[in-house]
Length: 226
Image 1 (cartoon, rainbow, N blue to C red):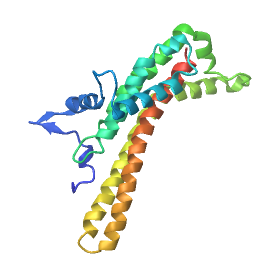
Image 2 (cartoon, rainbow, N blue to C red; image 1 turned 90 degrees about the vertical axis):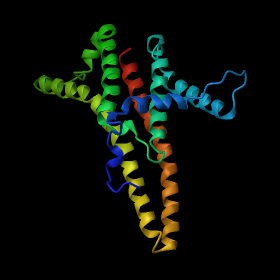
Image 3 (cartoon, rainbow, N blue to C red; image 1 turned 30 degrees about the horizontal axis):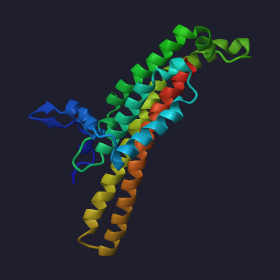
Image 4 (cartoon, helix red, strand yellow; image 1 turned 30 degrees about the vertical axis):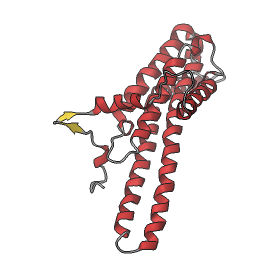
């Protein structure tokens, strides 16, 4: 267990070279593929989850929005695998880095906004000024709505970073408590260990939910602009 609380969030290095890119590519190895006509149970569960998420996100999209289905499913799978990878001991979670989450959020958000201005320019501009706004408030509301539009990718990135980071910090603190109590108080050690197991199960759920929420919000931005 690391003594420094934030050591697990620092970028790892191999031979003094950043190992971020190999770590980001590693989750692709966790995606199961089968050359046999019948998949095994784990691959079937993974396929069913992907199909369920795809059905939920694409249900309200038109034909133009459905062309993003492959990108959105690749995104949710990548984020979910990366989040789950970070729960392994002595591993690194790239989604705890705000810079990486911004690198995912900004291009996707910008793509949806550009689609809106290209194909639905009038509707996209109408969102900047709610209907029935009093004339004296028009300049202020345009500025407010523009700021709320520009802050969307930041909100996406901060939400994912904060949820994943908070869970990892809590697991780190509870793990340190288990080690500290193991030599002094055995009943409390059992209680704290049970809490750690439950917290780990919760973090697995959070890892999957946050991947789905991130992609779902991108999907909602896409629906509003197509």
